[in-house]
Amino acid sequence: MKIRGIALSKPRMPGPSFELACFDQESVRLGCRLGVERLELCSQRSQEGLTPDESTVEAALQNRTKEQTRILVMLRPDADDGDGSDSKVRQIADTIQCWKNEGVDGFVVGFGVHHPQEDTWNLNKPLLKQIIAMAPGKEWVFHRLVDRLQEPHQALGDLQAMGFRRVLSSGGSATAYEGWDRLMAWQKAYPQLELLAGGGLRYSTVRALHSRFPREANWPLGGLHSSCILPGSDTASEVELSQILALIRS
Image (cartoon, rainbow, N blue to C red; front, side, top):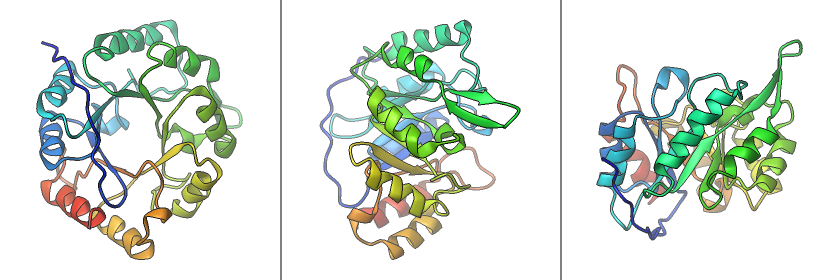
């Protein structure tokens, strides 16, 4: 059963905003209960996030309140970000059609062109424009494929011109902590684009970043992104999430 959403007003919290990557309904309910600003709904954590089950989206629409939590749905039928086949585009179109009028606030997508001889990536701009046109009024987010692109700095300008609001990135490094300086340089170069720091962020690294950069001006405009999943679990840790939120909202 689909749940029709309602218009949300976004409360202003001190410090950077926070986005929780949710791979199951328990994480969704936790994020809603603790009032995170955004949920990125996915499945298959082992493949870095695929399109979520309908039940996960329904749980998010059911559990949020009108004062909090924007809902973003991953559009990634499989882990091959270089495959822009007609069948995959149809799957993406079906997912967009299913949710775009049911209260979902936006979608997360990323497609590139892979050049295997050089092992380099570039944006698949025609395909991305085609997909965005399926729901032009929604928030569009480009996922961490940006960190594999040959010219990520230039790609950010292209994504901004296409209508992407937010880009999830680790600054081209293995983790956002390691790539922080580059990420913030990109943010300075593209002040109209919301860079979203993600990749290996947990309470310990967020605390270290908070110590280094206590002023909000030194944080990316899109805030922080994490699954808050600890070793040995597949679900967000309430302790981990609570600690991060308490720190960045203090």
